Image 1 (cartoon, rainbow, N blue to C red):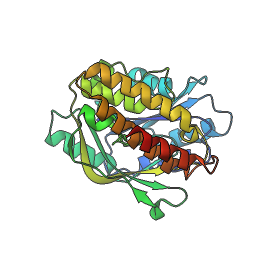
Image 2: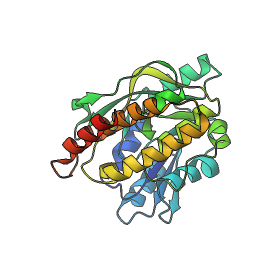
Image 3: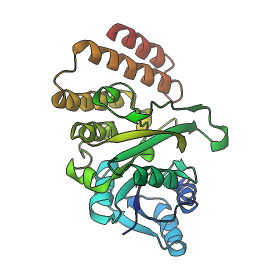
Image 4: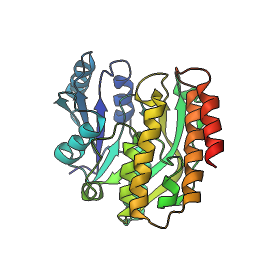
Length: 277
């Protein structure tokens, strides 16, 4: 049984998947397996993944008929993975070479921890020239930490105990946006201990297109995630929720400046945030 199972959903990822897999192969911790879930790709994704698996025997490829990222992750985590901890990684992101080693050391030092995440650097070409980096408040996450901006930022940043993930039922497969946040909310609400490590562990590749560019859908997904939080904690006050929505709209406004949307979108989202709080 490996310590980590790396879960990599991939759909038409021929331009980025090889670099992502190399970042896994270069981990200084070698106690891992990786599962690439080729989710109905029509490009060279499957060929790249299978070629890599021929060289690196810890990599396995699972072919899926286009079930979507949440279902693909659930299949990888609950049906294919054998590790004690799940380490999610998107097919266009990269890990620093110490990512798994740092997480393994922290998990062994604090056996009660169920999940870990670190800081994320954002890049659009060369990861060594990342423009911004997420900030992190070390310590255990609370529900109130999750209703504004997602402190984990990306699924590529999360390592979680497999049994804790299974206990909350994995990802909501009806969501295509904020599914990571909604799952985190259920994890924290269940009593799982999810903590931050104040180290850069992930390089997140920004893109002007794709799922992360559909800002209205991202906002709708956030609202569904917050609805989950409200069910779990009835003490969340309306003022807190307004402030959280303002923070989320501010995040969407920043994203609007990086993706292919009408130029007035960022201003509109900023004004909506001001109106909310």
